[in-house]
Amino acid sequence: MRSCYLSSWFWKVKQRRGAKKAIIALSRKLLVIIYNMLKDGSEYNEEKFEIVRQKQSDRHKNRIILEAKKLGLLILQPEPDISA
Image (tube, rainbow, N blue to C red; front, side, top):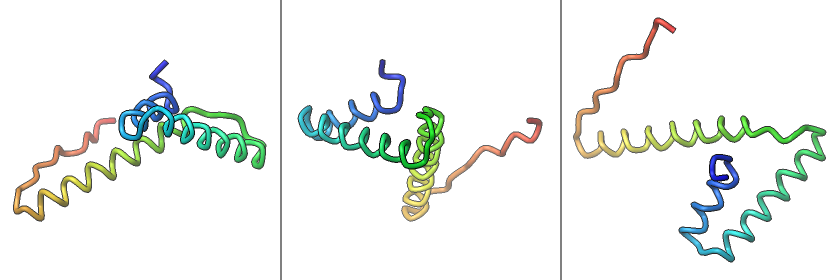
């Protein structure tokens, strides 16, 4: 199931680093998640990863916009929808 965060993260790392390193990286990531769950007494929540994914997406978008401005390009951004 590639729709969950950890699965998609694993496949991205596997493409860049190879299968063995991706397995080790995923193992470490799972151990950190489990440690923090035990420490805080919290449950696994996939929604936390969606928040992280959105922040990363926003950061990536802003980085591209800054690079375009450095090159002298004009960036037109859509106006925010106020009706919601």
